[in-house]
Image 1 (cartoon, rainbow, N blue to C red):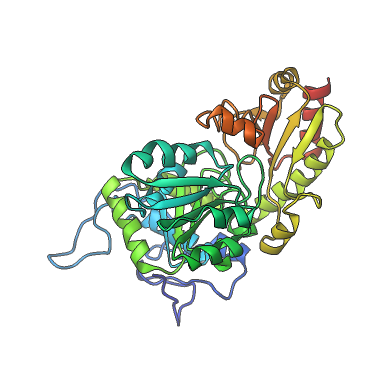
Image 2 (cartoon, helix red, strand yellow):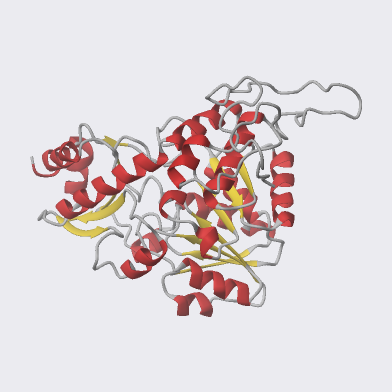
Length: 403
């Protein structure tokens, strides 16, 4: 659990135990300075990469606080504490991928228990809960989390978790986090929110009532398409935090020191990047709506999005994600072959604009009938709008689609 330093504030030149939660600072400053911020013994402004598997003990019964990097590592610890500060929780955990993070969260469920999930959910999460945890007796139901009546109707006596993506990937549905959390509390269930798309800069699920936040920190937190990683932050339950810690040290799914450092470095610019992603995505989404070959644009920042008021209530920004449907499969192929600066690649949240074909990439493992029902068709594209000049992004799309 974090400890506020009473006397030295952000200046700690003695140990790794005391760190400042920086409650007097704004988000942007917290993101830049992290937990310890600097290496406490040398004053290094960038937290070093502690590329060590094991740590020397002074004598029997004494420890520096570190023993073995699968258990604790100073670089990973700084990332975990920083994420706990930014999300407003008591404990953070950094995993080797977003998938590993979600595996840890679903491991909180016992055989015979039931989880309710967003119907339009990342294909990897779909695979985890169906193919992996399904065979261990975990029951699950997919619902449209933006429809509270549908959420309530899915509850069973053994429901123990609500797992929300909001906005969803890739249909951009929005769930009312506070309302779903209240429903979960009424049946003594946990609320988990995948906050990958908006990050704590735009959305803070734990302050809205959620119990756990997860991230694929590969995406916006890292922000540079150079590392794979995942984050879990626990709001206030020490017992759950202990269970996640046991899962990590038993499964060996912790994030390596170099990758921890890369995510830490990415977080320093999170606020300025998210502002640019947000600004660019709005302009690109509006432009897409003017294009004859584009049949529908899915973007939470449109005032006529059915969940717009919920978005305005619980977030401070719309993010950088857009999905859209075009007039034909031929147009899809034309766009994906024709983009130049924009990259046809999986993933999202980096500085570069990426365009993805969900039906065979991110949602390949989602059954065809479910994809069809959701609208993930062979004419459907998803775009992660980067931080390039927006005129260049639009010009490249224009050439690829209409040239």
